[in-house]
Amino acid sequence: MAAISEIAPDIYRISVFVPEFNLQFNHFLIKDEEPMLFHAGMRMMFPVLKEAVGKLIPPSQIRWIGFSHFEMDECGALNEWLQIAPQAQAVCSEAAAMVNIEDFAIRPAVGLPHEGVLKTGQHAYRFIKTPHLPHGWDAGVMFEETTKTLLCSDLFHQNGNVVSITDKDILGAHREAMLEDQKGPLMDYAPYTLKTPKILANLANLQPKTLATMHGSSYNGDCRQALLDLNEVMKEIFGKEETSLWK
Image 1: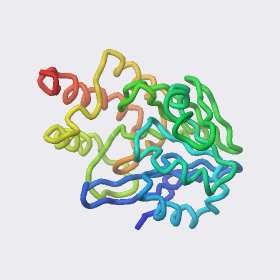
Image 2: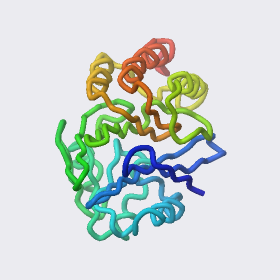
Image 3: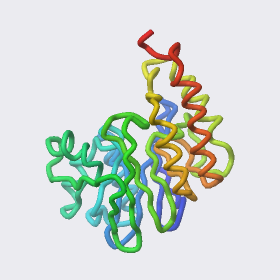
């Protein structure tokens, strides 16, 4: 079942917890004249997610389907949504639109350039390119400018069935999750490069009020500092040669 909570004005977190993975998969519906669903979710989760969206708006009214990068929990069910929402289009990075979605999706996507803005009525989304952060050269995030909510995908990943939103520290839980994943096949979950500090600093300069995370609790504490501190956690875990598969 999906748990629904409003984490910012008009922004609803739809969370599905999968015990086998000890992980929440979070999707965000933003009500507006042109509603946005950020994270299409996996195909296997589509019936559950569709039912949850239906408690907020008729699913056929979805106009935009956003995501960070090409991955099954980000856009696996994209075509299922496009089939039931006749006006819907995917919105993503230019790279994702060109090299993935043009072939994958049944309808053309809108590829946004860096700092490109999509307006949906009362809300406006600024697209920020974040190549290889959290992963994938097509990666990016969306900053909803009216509520100052950063739809930040896998950044701040936390394991467990946690609360929907918190102002308490999430970096500790993120660090634990990443260290736990180092023991398994997700060992190199996120590359740490010379560009990582600058990308995170640029996101911090947006001064978001809420971090809408794909896995784990959303955050409404000091988001700017959390983004700056995330660099240190990533550098510790992913920035050392001995943590790489390529020893």
